[in-house]
Amino acid sequence: MKVAQKSIKFLTISLIALFSATIFASGSDKKHDNQNDGGRVNTKEEVEAYILHHIKDSHDFSLYFYTGDDGERHHLGFPLPIILWTSEGLVTFMSSEFHNNDDGHVIVEKKGLKFAKVHSKILELDKGAATVSFDETHHATNANKVLDFSITKSVVGILLIGFLLLFWFSRLAKQYKTKQVPTGFARVLEPLVIYVRDEIARPNIGDKHYRRFTGYLLTVFFFIWILNLAGLTPLGFNVTGQLAVTACLAIFTLIIYSVSGTKGYWMHMIWMPGVPVLIRPVLAIIELAGALLIKPFSLLVRLFANISAGHIVVMSLIAIMFTLKESLGVVGATGLSLVLSFFITLIEVLVAFLQAYIFTMLSALFIGMAVEDHAEAH
Amino acid sequence: METLLNDFSPGLFVVSTILLLALIGLMVKFAWKPILNSLEERESGIENALAAAENARKEMQNLTADNERLAKEARAEREAMMKEAREISDKIISDAKEDAKEVTTKLIETAQASIQQEKQAALAELKKNVAELSIGIAESVIKKELSSKKDQLDLVEGILKDVTLN
Image: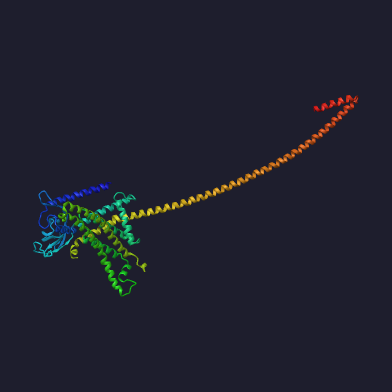
């Protein structure tokens, strides 16, 4: 009970800290561009642009925009640190210096270098250039991408969920020291852990080896699931819809099953016994491509595509409110949008679990194929 | 595909790799290892407890079976004992009856014999008394010298009267 009270206190304090920071941030936002109308989304094009913007990673944590008493647009959210590896070495500054601009109009000068943010990418301007110039396909002609290690919204999401997972499960672990059956919230977590162990890890990897990989599988399962769910909240994380993150997870799985693969596993892949010698090299190419490329690629694309698509569908249905306002009227469009987005959100809750399950399940399956004993198969 | 590759952020990839590695390491150390160990401990504990309960049940069964067997044996023994006792008592009774019969017949026989004897003795005594009496009467008759027939008759009658008084 005491721990719960403490954690609630901690959460409240951190929330207050976050929002007090936002208030300072919101004051300094000014309009620098005409295209990005202070976060207003009314037309079809704006909806499309907003959705595409949303599913990308973002350098600041926007909650919402609103019109203040002074008639100006304000931005509620907080800036995040930008960390860049540029031609001049490490450069850091806060994202608030871009003033929520995302089309390259605001130029930030640091260490004699000029930076602009275009579609959530930070570009370093060539020497001598004062503004970003674009070609007809809207590609910057006088600026280059830099290595961007910023604490973006996705990184914040990873950190937040990481701490949450650590907090939850280390508490569950501590409970076992004093009692056999955990109480409170930990009692909800325990069957989930048992589920992953008994339904995903053990049947796919086998009783002999599953113990080594259960830690990884559990982490991945809860990481993906909770982040998927966090993506459905108004905080609008889209971490598992970032190719970089899903690629990272898929490569972890690839490394794990490649490193722990038995001799038999590799032998079957490179020099398949039991088939004519001439076919063996062909099979080896197919098998290697399957194991080293297709398997991780399917993992990373499946998760990325499902979550991104889910976000796009939910946001499109919400956007019915604006796009069908004329034909259905305000009440009709809003009602339709609410009903549809409610049901699709329910489905997304299911998808959030399903994708976490599938990713973990396939990882376990691939690991299981790599560690099983091939000797007894022939 | 181009937009996909364009969206791929190498920086985010590096950052998330580092964070995920740290997360996996920390979770394994502080959460999964102790949790899985405790779960396994608990499961094996439950299994052992179940096995122990099963053993106890079996032992109980054996015990009750033993008890039943013992009770049966005891019952059989008791019955046998009762039967024997009944037989013995029957035998005793019949023996006693026979003995008693024998004794009574013997007693009756001796009693009859002694009665006979007594009878003989009494008869002998009677005979002796009668003889003595007869002799006495004869003596007195002879003493009175038979003076008159009438006197003789009175005398005999008087003596006989005495005799009946005896």
